[in-house]
Image (tube, helix red, strand yellow):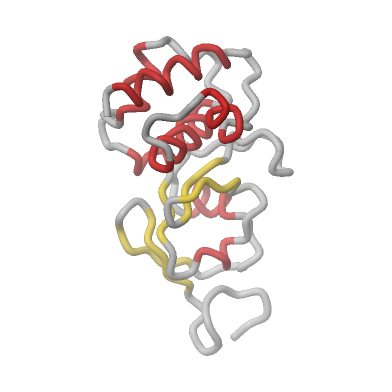
Length: 161
């Protein structure tokens, strides 16, 4: 195995599940997952915001947990399930996506995919989240400051589950 390559010794290709389908990546294992998703798999929904795991624009799910993909080496997702905004729902039918639109949450779009992914994970963990649970889970930054609409959308989605 070449230094820095993915996978196990003798197998330079790393395999994982991406949006419910098996995929393989043969590249530098230290490459941030964000760039593998965007550049290798051509999934542009996950956004680059800061590159230091602060803003949350790059949030995806790994085995159902929200993670910031801009600093996560792709080598850490071998054998795991990765879900991006594209895999959350093929037609924006996920309850949080519907609520996002109903409550007019999006403005510039910078944070939206990461926010939606964080909110979807929150609702999975806490189907009827309290404001305190929302505050704890929703640490992503929104440049347009639509935090009140984000909270409303999360409560709206929770009420329809």
